[in-house]
Image 1 (spheres, rainbow, N blue to C red):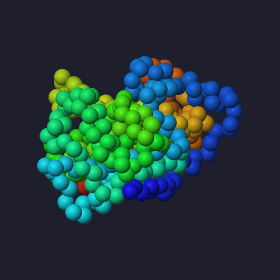
Image 2: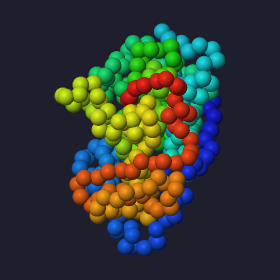
Image 3: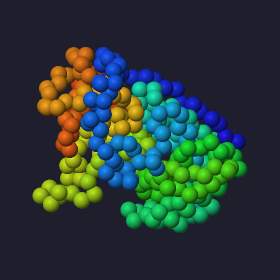
Image 4: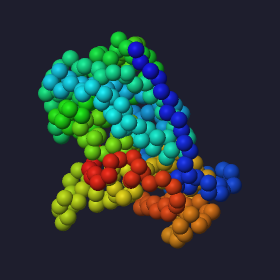
Length: 318
């Protein structure tokens, strides 16, 4: 059996919510559109539009959450609720930060689903191949299929027991090739042992990939600053550093995803000084219409995701 749980959305004033909107004119919208950097890659990126591999970020996202364990690492009795609670804040984060534009409907397993292979059959390290990743997801879907209806699933979330430390990290694929209940499944995230350090924000980060957003950390640190993988955006965007000071989506990314409209963006031809938005009713400038762009800090009251969506004292990226 399975249960369907629709996560309630709590609308929170984030970024520009509540700001006075500019007049609804085509001129204002076309002005903002001048700042839209065109997509420069056929993969995840920061240009417009997001790549066609992305799931829609507006509307209902239907997720199948499968909690899995293994013969060599069985889940302890009573651990299912802990696993579900660990990631729940990431679902709430996405709904809140979208301004109620994204509704996530989760169907989750009522019990741990036993994977037919030992955990060691899946080589989870930074060299995990696409084939091995898809095989792991496919085994989870097949093991759960008797009790799940995948016919309307958009994304599969496979959550490994905390006991399986060798399922070490949490990768995403937007190119899954698994069919269940007549539905060709194309998107999946597998949550490994790092989820227990990072909490729900790892779900929000990885879901960002399924919606078309790229990683903002560096894959090679600067030669003059070895070890600084976060030299580009620091801890100011969730797609850069999950454990950063302000792990939220940049306004730019929210604009990409359709969570901000053109009327909420000012395309400035020259540098502008913006007061703290908690004291201003003006829409924020987004970027000058050149190849160089910038974003504005948000100084506002509201929930602190750095405190509420992950365990305290943690660091890391995925």
